[in-house]
Every structure is written in structure tokens, then in C-alpha cells.
Figure 1 (cartoon, rainbow, N blue to C red):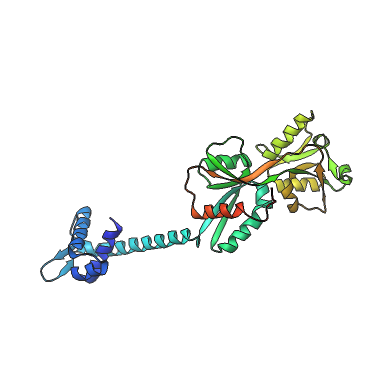
Figure 2 (cartoon, one colour):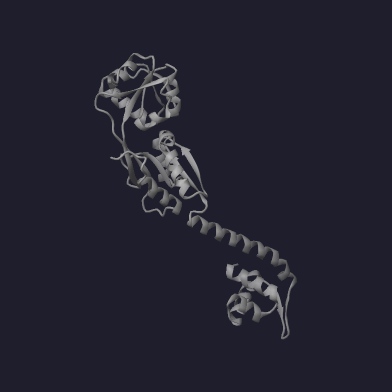
Length: 297
């Protein structure tokens, strides 16, 4: 049953007149007759009885009316909804984001996007960096915010800004009186970091190897926000992406520059190659790529 057949059936059921129904639908009488006949053949029986004087409905035809009305109403609702989504007047933007980016990057960006498109809602999924890449590849999410993948031919990566790392220590820690600290000093101290798989954990372990130091792991946790709370309570030292420092309690934590060669990672937005993005995702990528809150490279 097609939309054209539904409209033809309801128009004829309402008017019981081929001339009037055809005029209402901007069809010829012959085209209307063929449409009704095709519908009857598909359903397996007569919906109308027609003689030289008038058109009457069969019992089967009358029973079809409420179903046809519901189908047509659902179609019209669907059409209206999709049109609203194309105009970005409705819809939900789903984003897979590293927890660090969710805290430090997305609030300002989403606030700006919401001002432009007030009827859009947002669903932010905190996902580890490596899982974001996997989930976008698998089509679970259209877009993700993560550090640049080393090898990924299936994804586009739009860089946003270059990120490095800073050290955080408790306010009463011996390092707190210094403005700088080395990776060797950090790795040899009781350390708090994220659980594997984590790009931050990978950076820490790589720096320990480079400095011939065994990581003195005291606490590992899943969320970067939890990590900073353990540091604030004196459990150890850690390193975090620089942009995250605006999300931590600086009354309990001292922030230090890392003295020797720091790590530079490109943060950006990823999406699948050769994939037609939704209007809402495309619009978000365009906006975030030029967002003024990001540091200039």
C-alpha cells in the first residue's frame, strides 16, 4: 500500500464521487480509477461498489478507513519530524567524547551550539579514547572527540588544537613549592593515573620507560575527575591534559610545568570516511572546528 493509494482511498471514501475525489487529488478520473483498482487487487477484494448513479463502500472498505487515517497521520507526522530535523529545529546530537574533553572542552562548545539551535538536545557518552575510535568505525556514533589516531584509513580527523600535559600535586607536597618538575621525578613518586586502556596512561608509561623508571603506581581510576580528587587528598602526583586544569580544585592542588620534553597530542573530531553525516552532525563539526574557545595553533 502506497501513500498515493492511501490518499486516493480516503478521498473517495469521503466524497463517494470519482469526479470530486479526482479534483481534490489533482488527478484524472482514469488515474484515480486505476489507483483504486490496484489497491483493491493488492488487498484481494472490492473496497467500493460503483454503478452508474453513485459510489458505495463495501464493509471491507469501511473497515479500512480508521487504519488508513492512522497510517496517513503517522506518515504526515514522520514527514514533519524529518523536515524539522533537516532544518535543525529538532533532534538529538550524540557525541562520543573522552572524559577529559567532556569536562574541559564540550561545555562551552555545546552552550554555543545550543544558542544557535535551541530545540536540539544532546547525549554525551564518556568513552575512553581507544573505544571512541572503535565505536565511530563501527557506526555506533557518527562523531567522536579524541586524540588523533596513529593509523586509521577509515576515519576523517579534523584537528581542533594541540594539547600537552601538566603535573598536579597536593598543595602540601614537596614539589608544590616548585614551578617545574621532571618526568623522572614524577614517575618515581607515588603516582595516580587512569586505568588501561587510556591514552594518558600510555603517555605516563612511555615516559617511565624513557627515564628508566618503574612507575610507583598508587591509585588507578577510570575518570580523570576522580584522579584529581585523589591528588587533592594527598594520595600521590599525576599528569593531566593542560585544558583540564580549569576543572580541578586549585585550592587543594598545585599545578606544575613539566621541565623536560613534553608530550604533544592533537585533539580533534573524528567521523567515518565516505559516510553521509546527518545535518546536525555536519553543522556541529563546522562550528566546533572554528570555535573561538580553542587555543590557536
